[in-house]
Amino acid sequence: MKFTARLSLRLLLLSLLLLGSACRRKQGGEGAISDSMYSDVGGIGQFDDFEQFGLPETRGGIENMTAVDSSAYAPVYFAFDSYSVASGENSKVRMVASNLQSNRGQAVILQGHTDERGSREYNIALGERRALAVREVLISMGISPDRIQTLSYGEELPAVAGSDESAYSLNRRVEFQLMQ
Image (cartoon, rainbow, N blue to C red):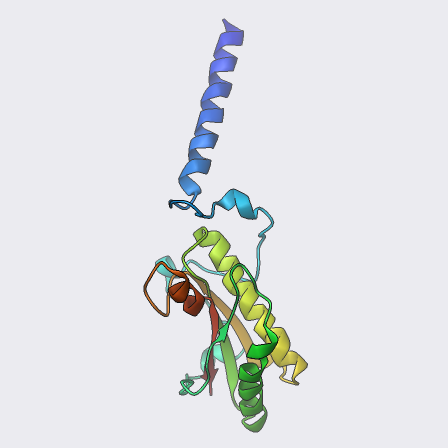
């Protein structure tokens, strides 16, 4: 009797684990990305659940600054499932670096975004990795790290609606928000 009860309990626990795992996976058709495909994603940067608490808490002295018009700066775009800044995108980062060098009182928030494919957790981590990659390029161009903040929105704020490659390619980006 004890053996049967233990076996039943273990089967119940295993069933709950499998059910929980299945519920966490992103629903989709062919080509849908599941959490299990990206088990290497760890805690990248910091993220507070902005749906529950509002925007993530800022770091450093940037939280006391106000946003300035950043519309002149084009987003940096990324390939699918990548956080490498392509050489063709460096000129966009160079423009922001030049502005920051000319305006010592300004700082920048790098906002990382992804397309809708992948789990929410994976996309938050990928958006943060993209923002951190652009941060490294800015630092290599002489911008002080304390003037740069990263923020990941993952898939939550798409630039365009749609579920095709043209929409996806515009949503995989880092945007610049200048602060003064």
